[in-house]
Length: 230
Image (tube, rainbow, N blue to C red; front, side, top):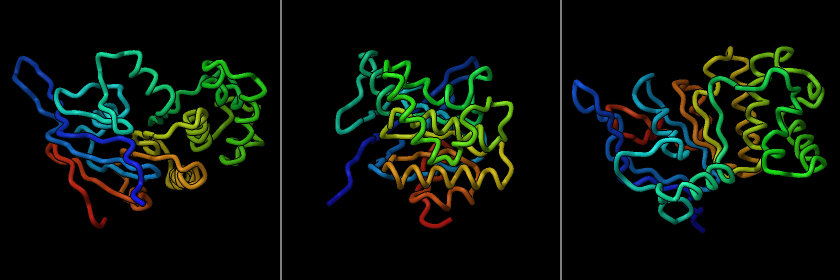
């Protein structure tokens, strides 16, 4: 049985306009993202990888083209629907962890649950489950300054998956980490994918990291090209 297509991009383009003229960052991009997928989008800095990821995550709107979520075309004019989709179905990881420094690890983790008006006991139960997956149970009461860079990024990942999103989008998640910490973080992504079936789309310039994904694409000159081998 074929896997469900959770996101589909059709003929996506993104253009910016300035006094010097038009700059087309993305050109005629087609992409199907399947349930349980692990996708890496590769390319050097400045080619539009983050722009593409933001479009997939509904943080940015394409100049032209169509996006389908779960078989239904996204209507950008229905702002409440777009916000609901983003809140309930999509998790985000950035190069910087953006943890709240005054909060402990567990307090940072449960924030999405509190915002979504979960009961505190349900938040704590979910946090315990995630801490076990992250191998950070012993760090639950530590604040971010007491964690290593890799541990902080793990907490950011835990916060992003707290509401059990279908799709997890990661923008250079290992960009600020040493090789050992980067490998630990990548292994966490693999564990999340295998444990929860979470679909992962990752932007990176790290080819070693990309080898651990199921599918790899190169963004070059505005076009997205599938790589058979890397």
